[in-house]
Length: 265
Length: 266
Image (cartoon, rainbow over all chains, first blue to last red; front, side, top):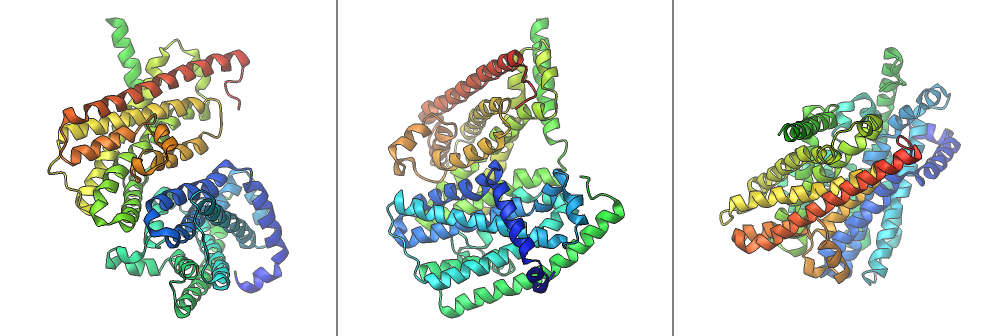
C-alpha cells in the first residue's frame, strides 16, 4: 500500500472509519481499553506523581493517553482482521474491488482516533478532580505531534493485524506485549531510568518517538530539533510500516486463498 | 464416610477438570506469556513509575505491592472463566441438572486457581529478588508463604463472586478488567493507603489484597507472624465472605434461571 492508494480511496477510508467508530461505541471491551483503563492509569499516575505538581500532571495525562493508544492498537487494531473473520464478513471484504488494506487502514484510524479521547478525559480528570491548572507549552507543535502520532500508530497497526492473523501463536502473546511497550517507550517515566541496553530497542518502536514528541511539546522539555527528529522518525517508521504491511497483506491473502482458510480459525 | 469421600472426589475431579479445561487451548509458551512475562512486565512498569515518583529507596514498597497484586490474575480471570466457561461451552444445563453438591462444585472451580495464583505470586517475588533487589533477609518466609496463600484465596473469593455474575451477563470480562485495574488503586499496591481519600480507604478495607499487601510489607520489614495476625485473619475473613456471597448468588441465579427458562440466554 502507498499514499497514492490511500488518496484514491479516501472516501472508503472515511466511511470505514465512521462505521468502526459507531460499532466501537457499543462494544464494552473497546470502551474499557480505550477509556477506562487509561483513566485508571492516569489516576494512578496522578496520585503517584503528586509531588511533581502541574508539570507531572500534564506528563501523566499525555502518558496515560499513550497507554490507551498502544492498548487500543494491540488489542483492537491487532484483531481488526480476526474480528471480521469471527463475525463472518471477512470473505466479503476480501472479495471487494477495494484493496483490503485500505479497509483495515480505516478501521485502525478509527481505533487510534477514539483512543485520543482518553487523553482528553485524563486532562479533564486532572483539572477537575485534582485541581491542576494544566497548560500545553507548545500547542501548535503538540497538535502536529498528535497528527504524526496518529500516522505512526495507524501504520504500525497495519503491520500487527496481518501478523496476528497468520500467526495465532504470536497473538497469544498479546497480554505480554502491553506493559513492555509502556516501559520501553517512556510513556510514564523517562527511558533513561532503564538499563542502557534497552535504549536501542526503544528507538525501534514508533510509540517511543510519539512519546518523545508529545511529552516534549506538552511540557516544553524538548527543543525544536528534538521534536523534528521525533516527527521525522514517525514519518520514516510509517513509510516502512506501510511498505511492510503491503507485503504482509499480499502474503496473508494469498495464503488464505491457497489454503482456503479465509473463513476459518 | 462414603458421603465424605464422594464429596472429596467431586471437589477434586471438578477442580482438576475445570483447570485443565481453562487452559486446554493454551500452549505452554502462551501460558508462560500470561503467567510469567505479563506479571513481570507489569511489575517493572509500576516499580519504575513508583521509584521515578518517590525515589529508589521506596522500590520494595512497589515490588511487594505489585507482586501480591498478581494474585488477581488467577483469582479474578481464572476463577471467573472457570465458571463462565460453563455457559460458553453449553454445559451449564448439564451442570445444573446434576444432583451434585453445589458448594463443592463451586469451590472446586476456585481451588486450582488458588494454587496457580500462589505460584504466580511466588514467581513475582522471585523476579523482585533476582531483578529488582528486593531484600527478604529479615522476612519470616513461612509467614510470607501463609500470607501469599491467604491473599490468593481471598482474591479467588472475589473471583467466585464475579464468576456468579458470568451466569447472568455476557459482559463479565468488562467487569473483570475493571475490577482488576481498580484493585491497582484500591489495594494499596502502588499508593500508600493514607494518601488516598477517605472513601477509597473505606472501600479498600472491604476488598481482598489490601490487608495481604500490608501484611507482606510488614513481614519483609521484619515483623513477626503474631504482629501481622490480625491483618491475616481479616484477609481470610474477606475471602470467606466473598466466597459465601458468590455461592449464594450462584444458587440464586441457578434457581432464577430455571424458573425463567433462561439458562442459556443473556
